[in-house]
Image (cartoon, rainbow, N blue to C red; front, side, top):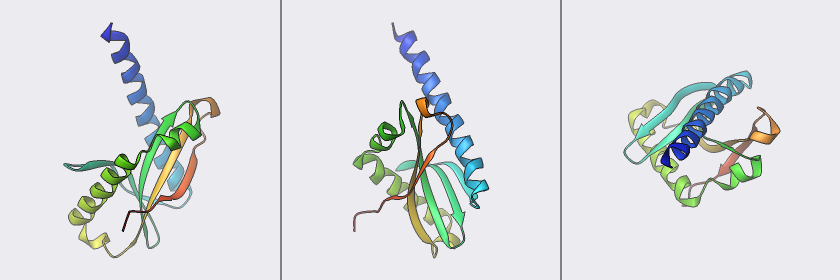
Length: 127
């Protein structure tokens, strides 16, 4: 019984990784430079870190049945973990700390094909 769930989870994981790769190339075409992929720290993970000019962007990539559901799946708790991971990233890369910071969401809907929706400045950290 668990085999089906593991298979489904494996497909979802693979779809997420494909979406991250697709997003990295898509952002490059939009003029961003990819600084890091799948940055991991004890406090959280960031799918992509990109830079464009003086802006450092922490990107969360989501794939769901439709883009709206993907956007809604980024919970308050997950946003806080990404923000903490962003602080950890900046501690490891102090040369980037002076840049403007932004949190983006790039969402994919399986029904809509491979074209992502880029939600720039999707949220701001609580002050």
